[in-house]
Length: 190
Image (cartoon, rainbow, N blue to C red; front, side):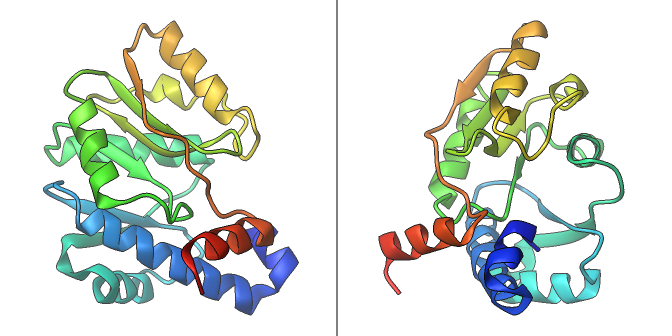
């Protein structure tokens, strides 16, 4: 669950916001052209409950796995490595907190990977809502100060140090605070 959102709205309301935004993400992921969509759930969520929830939201296109331990960089590295280990030719990782991300945008991200080593969807808060690669690049996630406004910039620097070709998607807002949620709801209606 989003801790800043919970601090502002309370746990129950934050959980409802998280569920709504995650269901949008599940639907977008399931509607993309990917052969296999894996949802990596946070370790503190019940895996069976999330599997049932994901299938209700988006059908059998989604497969849920636990994220495992470690910081976000370690979990991203592991998820990407697992994707390639299962035969993927490209892996895209998205967060569940960006309801503006659509299936068409995910398909565009896969298309961009035909021309780049890395595709990144920057978030307005300095992070990113999507990162995709054509091969594992653990160096993209080393030494990143997660949950800070420097995440995107430092990831770009890491890609440049590795001489990786990067394509950027349009910046989008993610939902981290009650103000973010109100702005999203105001833009999309009740």
